[in-house]
Length: 196
Image (cartoon, rainbow, N blue to C red; front, top):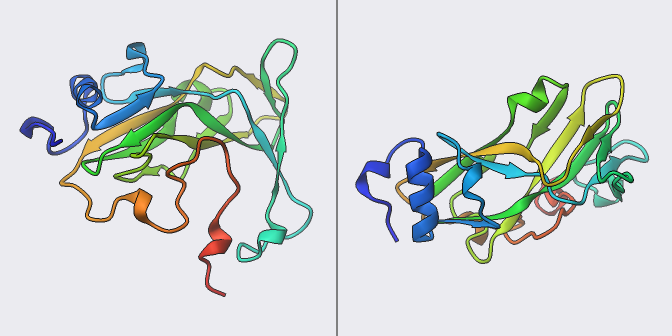
């Protein structure tokens, strides 16, 4: 299904996001209309998290040296503690699916940045990501402070800005070693395609 002409170029605003969701160009599960912002869709933190733990130098081409994904339990109040300098991988609560006519950018929110928490991803969400059934976005959360920061699963943690495009000839989900069908956090697949 094609987007209407006025959405062909540039950032989708709230009206365009709601229209893309209604037409199936954008899949969001679960969808909460309250998370639609003027020019982005907010996403919430999922209920699991993994600390990246290394045992020595990491060779990106050697999977045996990659960091271990160590599950992090929530505390008795349901909070996730991010320790100083710790790198945590966590999924979004929402599963996302983009048509070949949409692309996205993910960024952390100003609220978290002002508390010393960086929420990043590779940033780009390619056309066709999660098209067949939706997929979580894996977030990298880093605490830049000297003390632990407690965050709340289910709370808004990042924004997905959406752009209308002319369509992709090779959607992300058809590329090798992609993350387009992930329903949980998975380890890096970089070793699958690094030439050494």
